[in-house]
Image (cartoon, rainbow, N blue to C red; front, side, top):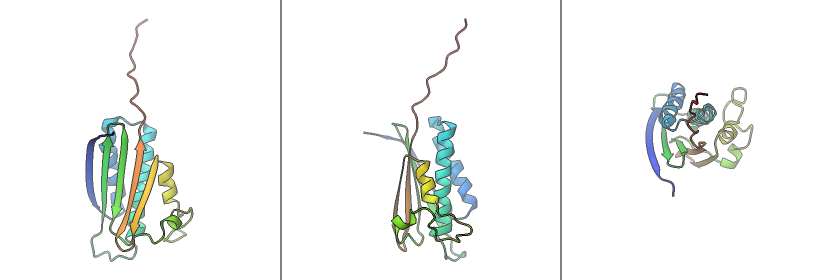
Length: 157
């Protein structure tokens, strides 16, 4: 049975500038696992999509006078699995299957391509979405990191 070896929680204002903050925090958090550059880039891309979707779609139509937040929790397991959960308390998704269809967007089609869920799935080992209308959406991303690379030793000939 896998065991949690570390975990963290963040609450960030749902503003565009915090997408970079979320990426940086998760990157620093998983650094202890010494991920490959590819693994780190994959996870950062998936997190960017999830956070951006929460900001753009989750709180669409909300007054800018009311503070809105994104909640991020991350866990590291002893089998080198990383999970990142990104949640909002926004409007929710009416039809998750339809929202996961490539090219579907609730945003301006001229500015949004509707590929967010596809991007998240392609850069993680699994992705799940839960949502309730008027209550918000939660995206759970899972990434299994490769085993630690063996230490290279220098041999003198």
